[in-house]
Amino acid sequence: MPPFRLLVVSAGFAAIVAIGLYDLHIHQSEPLSLLSVPLGLTFLLAVALGRGWARPMGTTVAGLLLIHGTGLLFVAMAALRRAMNMRHPPDVASYLGTTGATRLVVGLLLLWCMRQWVIAEWFAQRASRRG
Image (cartoon, rainbow, N blue to C red; front, side, top):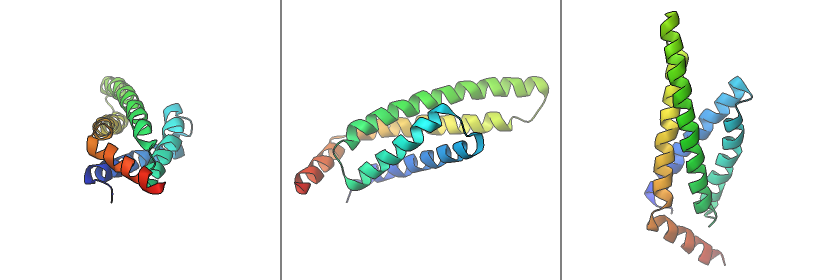
């Protein structure tokens, strides 16, 4: 059984992939969602199968999440400023800010988790058992 912290981070990352799929369904052309959804599904499959290359891929995906989350926070701040100038409710800004902050938190947790020795040991054990 995988370590608990890997399960928790994978569950959070599955939520990020679900948000990316929702964004693709609504907006249909956000470039980072087009990139992060297939990478995210591949990463989750690699973790579920216990593949050794899931660790470096997790670090890469965490970096992409940090970049995407930072970009969404900047867009959310611009949308919030625009909504305050036009006296509209900041619903788009709050959605973008929430998803941006969620991506940042899950990206940091994923980066932290992939650098833990317990995770590396678990992936090595799975690889040696496989053959």
